[in-house]
Length: 491
Image (cartoon, rainbow, N blue to C red; front, side):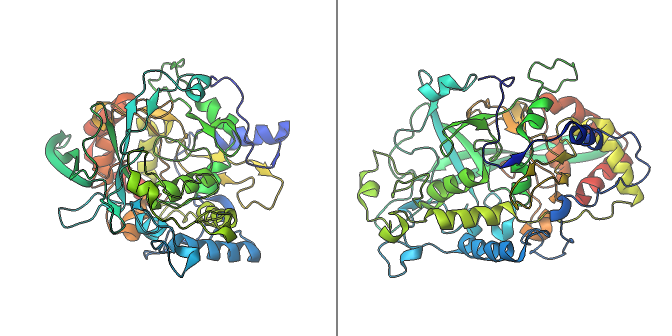
């Protein structure tokens, strides 16, 4: 399958756009040329789902503003399940048992604290509960599915440790590893006699509990991302995302975004990858189910194994008592509960922009566009018109992403391919809400592994397709650089 072939959004009950609607969408999402004042609806980052910004840690934990009364009830129940602390089986609380035996966290909330970003461990005394290492090995030839989706890198799970490393375990089971992180400080001169300091990380899987890794094991650090606006990202038409792709850089602008194509276990067909740092899942439902199985060890209708991520080599883990309840179809979380967590994750509101008319913010917005940031961090999209009462239907949103894979250079490479993504490619992360990250999460760490301690450091790590843009930031007048960061903080 190539990007030119159609990918249908089968997960949504779509009402096709009319010719007139398509013309309106094209006009409203075109890149602007007037930067003198705020643009219409720019403050409403999540369209009708937008909520007022809060100056507390709850800024990312609000329900979308356009939910019905019944939908808000589902949101509240889903929130309870998202926060549920899972316990080891067997337990008297049948609805909450099934943890592990190997796991990264005991609840969704433990990784996505306050629905915000995770962070790397702050030293030997700090746990890595909101960060883990993905792991795979090169496969000698593509699987049947990989061969079906053209351009997919042939990989396989580590034969002993599976697809991700778990650093917690139930009593009687050894955890798989301990995440060890060290940093090298890099000094970077900037224009105006300014200096930035970057930290280059090295990751090690220490204290391995089940013997050595495969000699060809490839590790990728992953920090838990923020949760807001996921249902809106899911509702961006695949055809609109594919229209932004330019894998051969035909327009010679140095940007060659590529779509991630993945197999949907729910719909039994290839779909556009949207979620995860390399866009490895096509829907919020499948992203949620994967996290339950891999991060917490909770079986569900999409990932039914009671032992979660344990491999054939981990015999005690596979033989352990699991928490599948006959009243839940033999799963540790059934479809109804999984759907509620998915709905909660899909309808977490995006806070409104702040200070959109401030002179420094307006100047920073112009610098953002002139420098080339908008080539990947595409500001605006209009979601599908959806037949049901889906609150994401037909919204003008401002996520600042093209949802495509981009080569970010050797500096940010994890050297671990995933699907169509090479070891240097990552999905463009949405920027909405980024200025509230420290308010919500208590830190200002960014990028896939949290190495950047500020927005400026995050920008300075850009390479590959973004190298030219990054170099412009290095050499621009300090006032423009400060304005750029101020604009990002307003998102």
